[in-house]
Length: 129
Image (cartoon, rainbow, N blue to C red; front, top):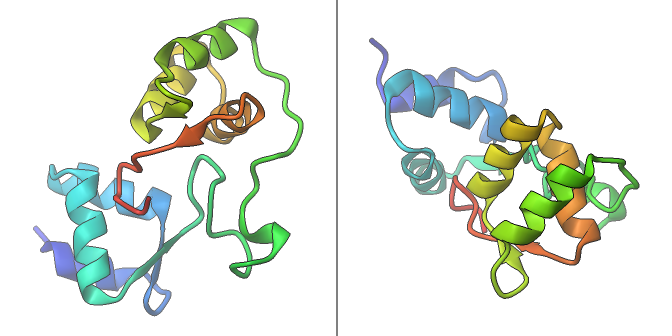
């Protein structure tokens, strides 16, 4: 079985790894996504393309950096669950993933729905925010 570092450096991009790849490695190795995020930071590997659409889609500081803020239509059940999981105008990344899975929406739709409700997503499962 490959080690964590071997798997992180097998990805063809130098010093960058998409969120989905980081989660795949975590699942494959049976470790927490947070451990992957910490190791990525230690190794100078930048995470990008957040599956909720929150960061890593363009140059930082430009509107294309994140893909939330776009109009999406999600079932009322999804919105109600997002509202019920929010605390102090915040909701966790993992809660949005669970809601997406439960209600059949995409993770990006869940991120957009949370954004449309004025919620801040924190913490990130990878520790990016």
